[in-house]
Image (cartoon, rainbow, N blue to C red; front, side, top):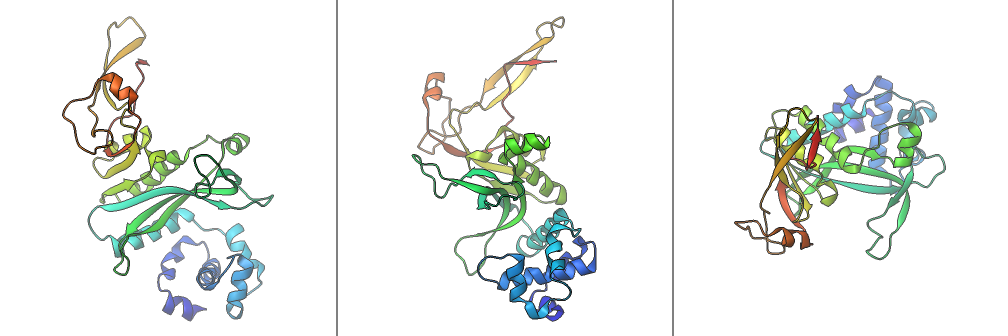
Amino acid sequence: MTSIANERLPVLPLFESAFATVATFIRAQLLAIAAILTTGRRTVANLLRTVAGLTQGDPSSYHRVLSLAQWSGLKLASLLTRFVLRHCWPQGRIRLVGDDTVTEHPGPKVYGKARHRDPVRSSHSYTAWRWGHKWVVLAVLVQFPFARRPWALPVLVALYRSPQDDQQRGRPHKTPAQLLHVLLRLLLRWFPDRQFLFAGDQGYGSHEMAALAPRSQGRLHVVSKFYPDANLTIGSVIVHNSRRNAREAEFRHRPPLFHRGSGKRQSSPPPIESRRKASGRCTARSSLMPRRSGRAHR
């Protein structure tokens, strides 16, 4: 077991510091090797059948690696991200992508299980639902010499929980965009001297994501889809009467970045009526302030 892990997969010993004991790391290392070699369902029982001649101790100790053993998932993610960036992105701006994926786990005792929409089997007229987990994934785009398109290597994941589950457990509910917002803040904290370019679909083009870009002092750029008539404004608060408790804000509209459907920049903003009637979508880099209401209280 030791010779296979050290000679064939030299990357695994780099994660030893994330485990509390050496025995837990040895068992986790063997399970990782078996997961690569096993075909079909990668349950712990099937993994042990693949490497039956290399196991040491009782088989139940390998089940406890994922249920009872102490190890840090965030530290594992930090070590994995540093390894990927050190070998694939040693310099330059790092390209990131984010999305959510649904995995089916219909068991009666699955933690965090909920009913989620399956985007692969669903259409505009039909919605397919799957019982299981919904994972929000943040990946690094890496260009390999043997592939034409870049590969997305996942480095951070977060489990999305339904509003009903959060209400039962007394937790504040977080949307997938809010979870990805937390993952991006982790990367900015781990790598204070690197720049990132994140791309996501319209589900992640929220005001919180747009506000994160200017707060990062130019280290994060966000690219997402949004409507051409989106309320992108820059506001300045003016106090008209100091005796009143309310403040009135005046907003200046930014001109839309693109003509709808043409992809060309325009010099002046269209009339308000035409902006309200616009129904298409466009892609632009977001570094704007979040939308504010017409009145703000002290």
